[in-house]
Length: 131
Image (cartoon, rainbow, N blue to C red; front, side, top):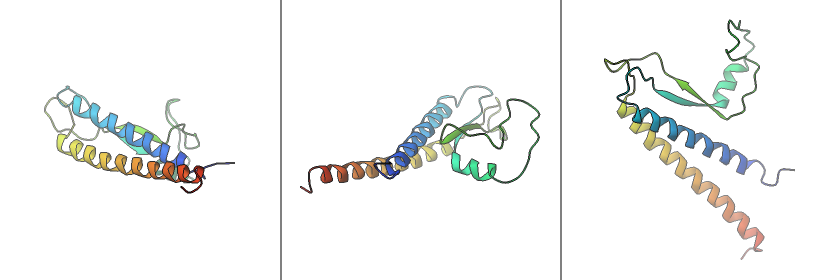
């Protein structure tokens, strides 16, 4: 029996995603002058799963390639963007994009914190008997 109906677990996974996103953005900004550093991003599991659930069979040419049927342990995945080049030193971190993503992620994180605080506040009210 799931005591909280899965809501707390969903909020917890969302907070994990927001924290990982913040770490990746911080790493990108910290490495803005590092030669050949490639910007990283965080993707949601459900976006990947929707692609993985299609009935497309792919040939794996290397044991390290992800299987379309593999189960991921995490709700998100960190990817590297190798397709762009912004600086002469091989670095592709766009500071304006990273700062915008950081602000967006902070708003998302704060909304999650407000929601989880509301859930715990409701539980506290129920435990106290409505007082």
